[in-house]
Each structure stands twice: as C-alpha cells, then as structure tokens.
Length: 498
Ligand code: NAP
Image (cartoon, rainbow, N blue to C red; front, side):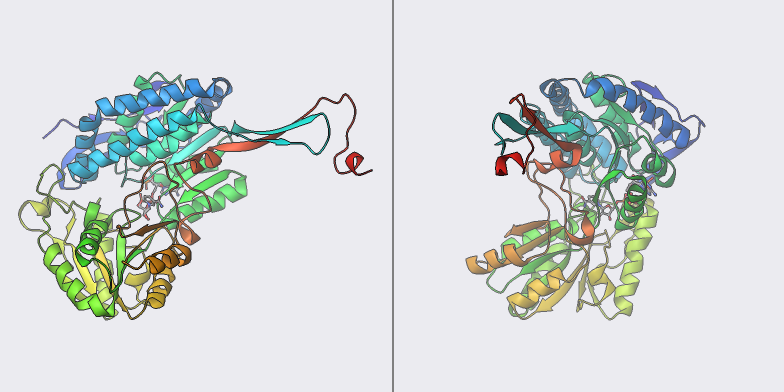
C-alpha cells in the first residue's frame, strides 16, 4: 500500500488548489479500497486563471526560436527515460494496465519527445516561384496560440505527450485537462515538463470533471484550439461548441475496429494478433479489435484455437507479472460492458467464452471482466456496431474477400483495421478499399508508432491526424508571404497577362 498523493493544478508555474478548495479522488481500479490520489475539482474560475497565464506566456514563447523550444521537449524526453519505471508503476496502479503495457505507454511519450524535438529544426515551409518578376513567395508555419488539451485515461502519458509536445515545439502554450480517472499520472507528467525548465505559463494543468473544467476550457473565448481524445459523444459536443465559438478543433474519438482472417492466412500468427488486439489493455484501446471477420473455411478451426488460447488468459493486478487481463477503468464502464453482453444475448449472439464480471478472490475488490468471445454475430447487431471498450470480441463469418471488406467498412467509425492473408493481391486491394485511418497487413489492429500519422476517418475523427508530421498541421497555421523587390506595384493575374 502506498501513501495517497495530493495532486494540484499547475498554473503559471505554481502548484495550486482549485479556488473552491473542492477535491476528488482517484482509486486503483484493480482494488478500489486503495486511494491513489486526491486532486482539485476545478471550475471556470480556475480555467480562467490558467488561460490568462497561457495567453501571457504565449507572447514570449512564440518568439523563442523553434530549435530552443524543441530542446525543452528533448529534456522532457530525457526525464521520461529517467522516470520511466516510476511512471509505469504509477500508471499501473492508477489506470490498471499491466506493467509491461504501462512501460510501453511511457515509451510512447519518450519516442514522441525525441521525434517532436527533431521537428524544432525542421518545421519546413515551402518556397515557390512567384508568377511576377522580382517577387519572392514562401510559406511559413505560425503557432496558433493557447491550446486546450483534453485527454482520456487509457493512455495517461502517451496521449498528453502526443498533444503537448508538438504543440509546444510549434510555439503554442497549453492547458491540459486530463481524465478524472488518471490525475496522478498527469500530475507527474506535468511535473516532468516543469523540471525540464519550461517557462511559467507555457504548460498548465487543470484537473476536474469533464463538464466543468473541460467544458469551461472549450467555451473560453481566449482558447484558440481544442485538441480532444475521447468518446464520440463528448467529441460531438465539443465540436459543436468549437463551431459556435470559432475555435480550431481536433477530435480523436471512438472505433469499432476489425481484424479479417482469410482462408489462406497463417492462423497461428492471426491468433496471436487477435488475442493481443482484442484483450490487450482489456480491450480499452481506441484501436482494440472488437470484431473478428473470419472466412467460413477457417472459421471453426480459428474459433476453437481462439477459445483455447483465450481461456488461459490470467486476470489480475497490473503489477503481477502473470497478469494478462487488467481491470476495467471504473464501475460505470464495467456495467457498460456487462450491459452489452445482455444486449448481445438478447439479439441472438452466442457467448462462447466469458461474458461475466469476474469476482473470484481478490478480483472482487476491482472492476474485472472475463475475456469474452461472442459467436454468431451478424453485422446488424449492436455488438457489431457500437464501441464496447472492454475485453469482448464479436465473431462474424463471411464467405468471400469482398464480403469481408464490406462488413469491415459497415460501421460509422474508421480508426484501425487489419487483414491476415498470404495473397499479395488481396493485401493491396485491402489497403485500397478499407475505410480506416490505419490498416495493418498481417498485424493486429494495435501497434501505432509515433512518427506516423494517427487518427481515423468517418465518425472517428474530424479530418486531422495526431503525431508524425501530421501533428504540425494541427498545431500551426500556414502563413503565405510575398516579398516584392521590384520597387513597383505588380498586379498578379493582370500585369503579367498584358
Ligand atoms: P470521454 O468520457 O469522452 O472523456 C475524455 C475526456 O473528455 C476526459 O478528460 C473527460 O473528463 C473530458 N470530458 C468529458 N465530458 C466533457 C465535456 N462536456 N467537455 C469537455 N471535456 C469533457 O472518454 P473516455 O471514456 O475518457 O475515453 C474512452 C473513449 O476515448 C473511447 O471512446 C475511445 O475510443 C476513445 N479514445 C480514442 C482515441 C483515438 O485516438 N481515437 C484514443 C484513446 C481513446 P472526465 O474524465 O472528467 O470525464
């Protein structure tokens, strides 16, 4: 048992309580008797103070040369390396994921730091000939201003890093509103940014309830950009407010990702992918495999293999090296997963394995759900269409490649996708025809790397991508500059046509 942490907001370089003095609690999802931290329940006045600080800091931060801004982020990367194990332990206690996965969460932050820092010496624009003589034309990237970063609990280090690091290198100042379920992780992360020496007000942290602290940030007239990752419902609300208040908004939302296994696939390989994709982090990844689309010729064999392999998965606390299935984040989400099992059986699906809340022994103190396989699922069922965000995978049988692609695409979401096949022609056709932001060939639906764009099509996103070069398009505006050194008025489209 570790001593509970007292987390605070971080505004203008100072750790402070909420003005109201109100606090909330964060508990271990593997054992809800364990208090991890208390943290401020912030409101509009706290948000206002943070926005004022971020606006003031922006005036000087935008003028700091980009390579220097990037050096701060590089230092954050070095500190993340130093604190990797400590952070991983904290993630595992507060969010529940296994230590191995928690280390991966931190590593993603480290990768993002070093990648983003490199951008400080690029941030390329273009030069191009002008259509007029003695005139020079170029584009440069300009920062946007004060950015509100609203993040979920499932990657409590990686996702805030994905947003904050490119935002800062691009010359913006930021205010992070992390998920209520992982305030201690966010606090430690922001403390690391502070230790790296960022000037006051450049990074700010405001804890609290989504509707209050998050809502106030989204509504605030002096916030220029909102970068949000979370559920489609919340994203839709935020998008509507940003439309009304003319803010730039980047939304990364839900998924209903599928893995196709064709009759010619390497079944052992596809099996490892399916187990990791469906049950890693207990299915609480936006890229988790929640549908398995199996060709009829291998369906029975593959289903038997999956059941056999999955029945050996061990549930437990994240710090137990034997644990493969971690807890669900909170009791509300646990009940939501259970509700989908009821819906599945009402709609005629068969529960091949699992299907229940796990309460044996010590598990009764946490929020555990058995790894679950649903068979006989048809594309019209709710479990084939709606995001469950738990260790539940739905099997859908198909008779052809075309049918597999059509069913994979038959969803309002479009984040990640995967196909296992040895047929190169099918692999390329899948790359072309799958409607998703990410497609894996002979790999599971999870496994993003930070130097490639991350995000989804259709209702998963709103046309932006995170990380990689694409992140620069979120956190900068293009400015087009013309320099006329002719010494006379030159009218484009007119004087050069006469
Ligand atoms: P969520 O309930 O939408 O919450 C996400 C964040 O938004 C939290 O910080 C939350 O604060 C805040 N929030 C809630 N209501 C708000 C409001 N009215 N105004 C402003 N902020 C508000 O999502 P979640 O349950 O934490 O995360 C799971 C979802 O995230 C899943 O749907 C998953 O697919 C998605 N996700 C997507 C990606 C991606 O890249 N596409 C990555 C990871 C997760 P509170 O914590 O206080 O509620």
